[in-house]
Length: 421
Image (cartoon, rainbow, N blue to C red; front, side, top):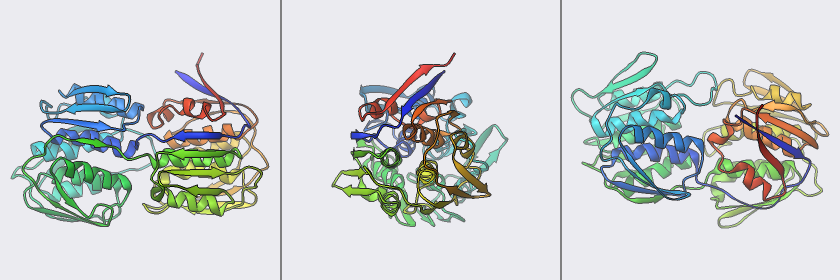
């Protein structure tokens, strides 16, 4: 076990390159199960969740070859359906994409219940609704999810009761090889929805409308291998943008798609941060300025992302006046506020609302990561605070950030990892 130590109060200055998007990489990795052939996936982030995904597939019979640090060849020709390790599956929320992939290839699936960060109740009812509409009978026993299309899969119309990124991705995986036409209405529009559609189309799929609320899938007989590059991670990029603002720094964040960052950029500008956009970079400048209050409500894309909520809350702690954060996507996502309170933050949580009163400065403390993005928020708080901040439970942070300590160190942060005990 390791912890992160930060001697903060130093502005971040320089350039950080964003890695491939975690939330796009995982469904695409599991989507390789649909392909009887070799897929070369580029721009993969070097993070724990990707490594666990590889372990799951290798345990099922896949062959995975590392070509370089961010490029892997995945061959799922000999994958055995229904054979995934429940112990490995429980380490990931995204392991539920195995359900859609197995259904799409074998017409049935048997996968352990997913794990991942705990944000309260995170049901998969919309996933099940989609699978049932395609012709599956679904059974859950607490430890496993089983789906069987006794009469085969059949394209259909599916209307989600609420916008669900996971369900949209999972139904795309299940339907890409289903006979007929599947239409998903009230679909999620996140960039990684588009990325999965582009990957499947590169493999021979016929998917249109990804990025809108209506996705049309014309089932194909089979998919073939391809070479495909994962899009940049907008959440990683947004985290570094906020870190630059919190430390009063000047940071150029490269390998980004600025359009994906518009909701984050808009709020930073509203708080007095200068953000300059290029073709594939954003530059954040905060030297000598004061942060002003703002209000944020998390929403599905293109709204402000829930995965940026904890990081933005840290910036609100350092802003003049009273800010309000409204979480509309997940329950129980404010647990990290207890950790910020240890650092002197003034936050009052009521249900899905947090009232944040800005303070002149935070104070160093020993805190812990309660989930992936909350851990990133603790890092930002430590970077912005003079003195030494210790962060425990950092394995949660390393699930989703590629070389966080190394990248920040190159931009002037005094940050390091140490063994616990």
